[in-house]
Length: 383
Image 1 (cartoon, rainbow, N blue to C red):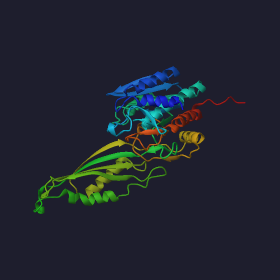
Image 2 (cartoon, helix red, strand yellow; image 1 turned 60 degrees about the vertical axis):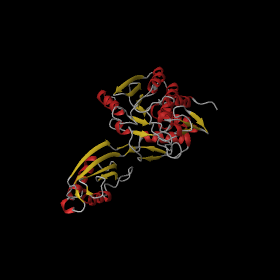
Image 3 (cartoon, rainbow, N blue to C red; image 1 turned 180 degrees about the vertical axis):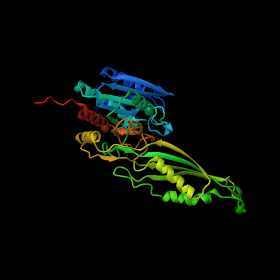
Image 4 (cartoon, rainbow, N blue to C red; image 1 turned 45 degrees about the vertical axis):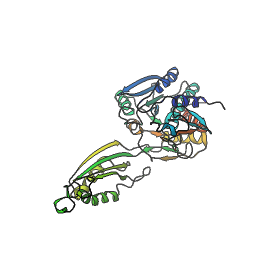
């Protein structure tokens, strides 16, 4: 069977080895396709990161497709069945780095827009794309930069569909209407180093910290809510000791992380951790890193439009979920009231032999187009 336009564009993008933070010409190719459709395309560069803001129309509502052209490194190339940046179809699957995360989504967005504009040149509102090459990396010069610029200019999106690979078992079975926040702590508990045979002359930070860590691990931080599970606290690393078996260490380092829901705030979690540590009388330093605030889009216009499009195209009932890691949706949600993530199945993302089933490529494009039709197609004239 001849490959569809969406598949061909996906393959074209996969062939560009845009390992984060490099774009390798992906966004320029999008500009070449979008400009003839009436899009005003703006490249926003920041510290080696390439961002694209492309908009068609000036009226509201403003519907934004968001995504990223950067991909994670391929890993050991000799472990791939085919070259990671040579798109290859095998056994009904399209293989290549970025096939699911998320070059298929970007191709589907562009072709969906082409088809929608061809059928509805006088559509309501505006369509835009926000594309970055800094999602898989530190994410400090990408989407967040564009969102800050849009806020300064008063360009306020009404809806945003992020093409992250959210599906679980089959295309369309899960979309993300929010994400948990991520708050990390680096805790250093200070003791007094000494000979292990003379413990009265030393102070063991491991012994002192253990009861506090046990209390932190047992703490119920919140109960979650309708959309989020309870906030979790997890230790990721513990380090202490000099390497000798007869030395009481003078310090202990503990790295931990909160994945927190909208039922808590970063400030409240920080205060409660400090209260527990202080109650145990620890001598400590604690440095915090907030890498993402939680965001939530309750059921509404955008989620209904996407779920309806999935149902019409595939007959699949869709689950709204807030599981998984952080995404650039956390930045967009600061300026946009409705942010939903939807894309291909995520079982192979970031893995050797990343792929997408070819049978899902055009339905994904159709769902994106149907969503535009629901939200921006002009109403028929009154009888």
